[in-house]
Amino acid sequence: MNASRTGRATTAVLISILALAALLRFLSLGSGLPHVVGVDEGFEVHRALRLGAGEIDLERDAKGGFFYLLFVGYGLYFVWLLVTGKVASPTEFAQAFTADLTPFWMIGRALHALLGLLTVYWVYRLGRRMYGERTGLLGAAIVGVSLLHVARSHYIGVDVPMVLLVVVVLELAHRWSDPREPERPWLLGAVFGFAVMTKIVAVAMVLPIALANWLRWRDRPLLERLASRRLLTAYAVGAVVFVIGNPGFLFNLGNFFGEAFAALFGVGVEADSPGGSPAAAPNLWLYYLEVLNGDLGFALLALALAGVALALARRRPADLLLLATVAVFYLLLAGARTSHLFYPRYALPLLPPLALLAARLLDRVVERLPVRPGARGPILAITAALMLVPLAVDAWSWVAREGRPDSRVVAREWFELHAEPGSTVFLIGNPLIDTAPNLSLPLRNTDDNLDALIESTRASEPSKARVLEWRKASAPGTAFDLRTVRHYEPNHSLEHYIEEDVDYLVIDEHHFDQDRLRRDRKHSTEVLESRAALAEACRTDARAELAWTIDPASEGISGPAIEVFRIRERKIAIDVVTGVTR
Image (cartoon, rainbow, N blue to C red):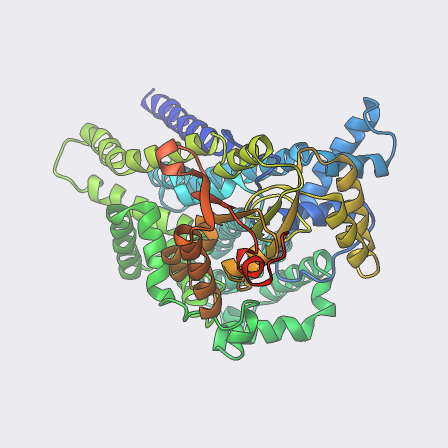
């Protein structure tokens, strides 16, 4: 009777954790669409669509397994549109994408959020197997309310799917380490291969897998502990899965190993940044600790690090596998000698093992308290709530903010209401793509500019030129004459833009805030100085007036702070000297 009651209570708690995790990941999925998308989302979306068109991407060789799942989702969506009569051919399907990307992004985001939710569940499975129900539940709760994991689950990418596969590999490796469990080298190898195919950094799991083999055969000869036949089988299966799913690896071996060597040993690190010589990278050993501290909070991170110490002291198979996972990912990430490839999301693989180590330590501490057994459960629940409720509140606030209009969408609406059609607008970004953050504002380009872009890409990238033609024919909104520089390029002076008859200059926080740019450490000194000079000139020169501004923090919305400056007089210096009226 007691066991039955405990089982029902466990199920109820698990369902509650998963329900909260689902709400945090599925609410506000449409944030910004169709005008604002995540900076990396287009990679997987376009690879899936290109695969549907019969094109295999041989260039992107270090990440990308998620696009296969997207390909299946888009295939089902195409069949549905075909059956309902909304499209009659693959060409019309592609045109539907260029006319409105919202359904395609929503399919991708929903699948991605589902993988994020599955990660929460699999952390529970892994924790339950390693340490028991309470550790599994608490570990799942930590990952479930982690703002870093919640935020990344909202946007299409490869980090969240890779983390799910890493957790599955950990569970399979833990089974492998137990001599009483059957060996499944084919299954373990296949999941490992999918993880590496999704993002190459998952190759770090080669060490926990080898450790599992050592633990299983600890009483066997040294050679068998190091490299049993079944371990080699698992590695071979993983390699085959990786190469089949990522054939570009074979065509780019030189570049792949060159880039890996540069990242790990600092050879050629300045060449890996398109913007020239960026500021020196931060101390990555501290950087990723700061990321985890910002995500988990000091108390929970301290508990996780104390859990690492406990695992080092006890050294049971579960302890060793989690320690190996934390150690190898942390060494790989923090030891990299890269000038610009460091982001908070890179810390995601550390989150599940640290969550479980923290949960295990908290459960163990409560279990040893000198109180009656019936009081330990409530004490554990209250202690966990004190640490997790603030994280859940932060995550909920972020989700609610994402559900409101993005500042860049509001700015687009202002331009369409107040600026003359065809006005010349200076932006940061890539004019080939009319969504933010590819452009600092998601404004539609003029037909003349689009025609020039189409002609410039027709010979080298005919599929991109074709998409631009469809986009030109179907894109809604008022058109503006966009003048752009890429985010890694220095901009010109205010005088130059006045000479070029620019009507509006957009100064946005993401590209012009000096504190933010220096903190990111991804821009050259030349870029930083040019951004600062232009922003200062717009704010102080009488020829530029502030036409409109928005502060998302005070408005309670997402997106960057934006200032729109209107040029009052053009070419005034030349007019005075020449006497020519223009």
